[in-house]
Length: 570
Image 1 (cartoon, one colour):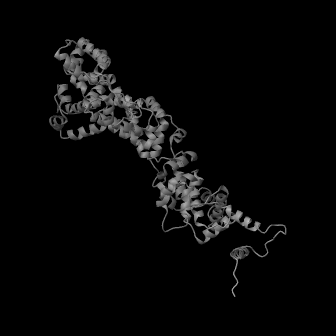
Image 2 (cartoon, rainbow, N blue to C red):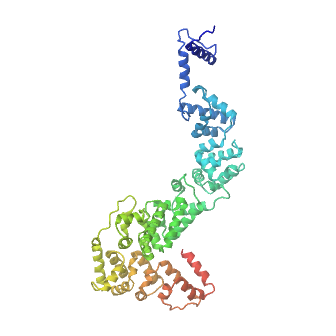
Image 3 (cartoon, rainbow, N blue to C red):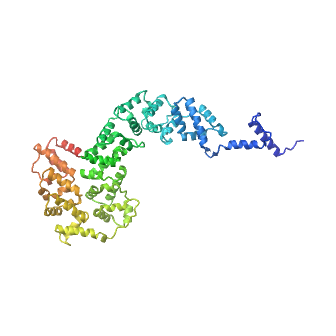
């Protein structure tokens, strides 16, 4: 007859059996201890490892034990330099987190032992903790980890030591590995000799360590020749290495050839060293932001718009407190806006010639959105901008755009312009007056100011009236632009004022065009290939194609000299 077993008794037997399998027979038992406390003790020990859906929760104490285990493995087992082993173990939190997910733990007390055992039987790719401890994120170093190597090689460790000895922050070495990996393959002594070459140029160890972190590629190939040239130019302007170091960002990378080109451009633009020194001190980003590339792009943009030298200087002297890239993008946005409202090219040049310095800080809303908010057609908005370009300031991102006021809101400006035209001799309410109101762009106060500038430059008032009536566009230019053009024609070239009175339209052409034409004319005249009495209107007003055809080609070397002049002026 089979005996029926009590289910409770069966489960108790299994529990006792399992318990004694887990606990040694020599385990001390206190005579006063409640046997039930054994299960409680074991549960408490295991529960010290709090588990989550992704594995154990890494507490500071667990992380410290893991770091110690890694340090012991890298230093004692792998025989890496202590500094490298310590950095790899303490500055690789993501690597440690992934490692802990792969190791099976029973209790908190055996973490170090489990990690050590795991590392011995499952060698890790040492490049991962090395690159993470050197300042790179997994997304930045994944493609840098070699697929055919697990262990850090001798040359890599030697060159890493040289960089650290030279003062480079170990947490910045990852950037050097990313941008100039060849450095870590140099034979013994090569990297040290390259660094010594820069020290021989007079660079301090502190400055050089910052340069290497910012521009790792200076360690590749021969000594960078542009870098000392940049420092020489800056030193001549009164800027020492401490100033340069202050404005270099270790998050950026620098192309010293581009910095040198930008610095040379600004040096050629500003004749006065004090002005250039003040500009660089106030806006160091002009030469350091993206190695000056955006400054050169800005110069190219303004050149295509026909900006004169004085307009260039004015733009940089009043440069907005924004990044150069943002300034260029804002100017581009403004240019596209003016094209979209169908403004004429000459008007666009006028707007940028006088207002680029603040347009660069204006981030405009989309044209379609502006037209809706302004409740106006393109033609009306275009007229508003022509009358007063500073209205654009009200249409930037983040501002509330109000509908344009009724036409009566511009009556004051129109009244001032009307009075100005009456003073020029136009008859009130005549068709001639209506045509003149459309021809004269700008506010009445601006027209009067520019008129007075021409008078102050030696023209009598009657002549100026005749000039602006014959060519109203000459008053669409800023006062300093007008002054520069008149001084060039009268004081530098020696033309009498009467020449400009007879042909005032010459003032509407850019100064660059004038210089190119007159210098080419002077070259041809010296070789007997041009009539000395050639009219200014013929020289300046003819198209580029006709000028080359009828003047430049008169001499066999004319076209080459003309191109050389273009490059020189640009």
